[in-house]
Length: 340
Image (tube, rainbow, N blue to C red; front, side, top):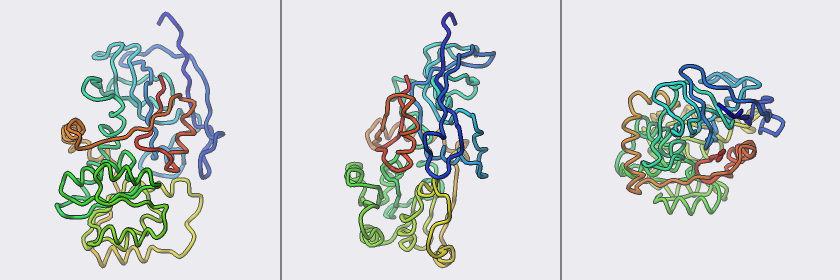
């Protein structure tokens, strides 16, 4: 390159204890190197903020290795090719990438997926047509298996996963019960066609949930845990299925919850109702379901059968604050940072 580029990065400065604070993030600027053979230099346009990243900040054992202190914070990105040393990519191409919280990234070409900006807004590759949408599609259809006339409930229902779950359930002939935080989000669920919409912040969630699902719940798509799960468990029908993809209520926990140990109650329900609780990570379904997902979801979005909302904040500097706000449920739809 004839002009030296400088890369603003946000790195993990310390492992958060509870809710992340500003000192857990380190901002720095470095010069951008040229790509080596097989690499592509990318400029980040949009950065995805996702709850799973909170788990990667911890050293606790999980399904993937944690970030190390000093690492650039992880995150999916929509990026523009600046310089290419790999076949098949040219400057100006738009790609789905995994550059993380930085303005520029060097990535192996085999990790990139070319995007067609004329087919759909490129931001959808990080939301409804990307990992969150696929999480909803695979978890609901492979594990939840909703049948016509059944009741599907989902928490965090205005988020990119939960909103897709409810709409896909409706497309398969099921009733959709959405649980979200605040009147504005509840109103949005009704706009999306959910059959019932509940505010988990209002009083007596268990009672209101029983009224909203008079025939019980056949599928509960778990994103949250906590008090919402406690309200849902008694309403689960015999042979109910529970795909578990997230536990957002617990991500910042530093100790066990107060009160009695409810594990015996849970296991009794699992046994007496023949429940299926199945944790999953969406990547396990990519080989068998991703092509079907892209075909189906692209068609549903184009036809308006599935709608989506994006919550976009401008500026990489705003990523830590937006990330913490997302963990508190202050986002409305898919949380994105517009970087450039």
